[in-house]
Length: 157
Length: 444
Image (cartoon, rainbow over the protein chains, first blue to last red):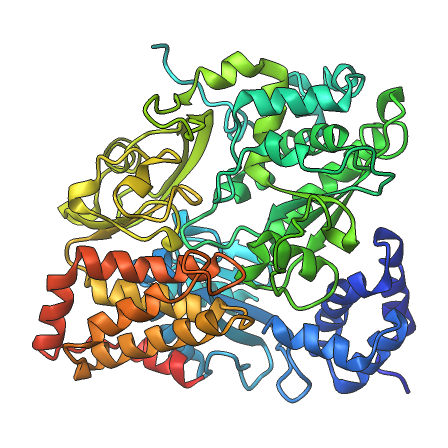
């Protein structure tokens, strides 16, 4: 039983023509696998490496550099919610917003709620400083957040 | 002087501003065929003669950068678009991509023609999901309309734009870090030379340009050199090495202001004008204590320096690193500079790529020293220790490969040199301001 479905393999291969070599498909492949499987397991790393004609350690090296991809011991929940803690947001309560959400849902940064619904993360500048404090739900930004509006958003996920 | 008319932001509030139809209705792509029929060197010369300087942070003359490509290279030559906008306080490129993608795409096509590139890679930070979807749709529209792909508008010029999403690393905004990341590796900046124009992406000649820079290229071609040079700040006649600060610029204003915003103005506006006239003043009726002039890596202006012109030369005249991304962050007079500096150092420590020891260790230890101070255990010698560490890291002292390290050192230098009494009083009074939220983040 392979870690990557045939569909995932085809999606990864579809990236090949965009680049002059297969190694450049490392990040696109990691994103595809991570989005689909909510983590990149050791088996998945080996299989990505086979597809890209790399050593698994090369894929693992790139993957761990970015601090973005979860390993199988700590997979993502169904959603991922990022809280900006950089200067513009911190000046307007971004860190306290993160804290309030962690308390309310009983979760720590980098971890997932017990029901597997969402993973909470702190982020460095999300590039939405005009709407500080801002959060990112998966890859969609929400601005001018309060503990109340954030909870309302999360509860609707 | 005639009133300034926004150009880069002229269309962002229009309904349907992202569509090809809307861009064409405003004259977009109307002269593309004409420009693609020009000799590439002539396009380069127009950009060079306009005085356009890169908007990503370093301010290097764009046209001059293009001329560094080897002549008569058989190709491929690549354009890499730096859309990894990650400097704290900066969000101008996000507006450009989300609201007016064809303005950027036209600039990319023109730049690729000038540098004889048939493939552009747009490196987009992962967090900009909306930008990704808007750009992806716009590129598809262009392919369907014969504006991208093979034989664009019958000119014989081919171009594909590939969107490549990052994975949350500030260092990918450094041009050679970006290249390494695009190649599928950890984003460790390369030792230069060779510069990317000689040996860049996939070991081929490569030009890396910022999103706003390429949007300016579009307007320079349509409106001309004289138009561009009529905006901004002329070269300083007493400094033969000053190329001036021409053109419009998108300024971001955030932090403790009433109306955080991104506004297009001629280069050379002052921090005070931005705060008072465009951002609704400092919030809660307070005064500004410190202002970041162009992203945190540029350091701080004190309240005495708010009339500094934010052109390429201005911030350097008051000890800042430069104009950077022109992202202004306002800190009010009720906020501790110790806390602000800790936030900056924690960011840099988190984002240092770890390749060069002075940066990896320096950013870590500066953050640790500030944590000690903020827990009430600071020592009087800590401030000089911070300055010593900051002075030892970066391209300027010659100890690191890339400028992230100079940008990590600069807020420390500026904060302590310009606000030293506040730091001394904080240490002397054994104040402590670590919050429970910060403790929680540090523990996980």
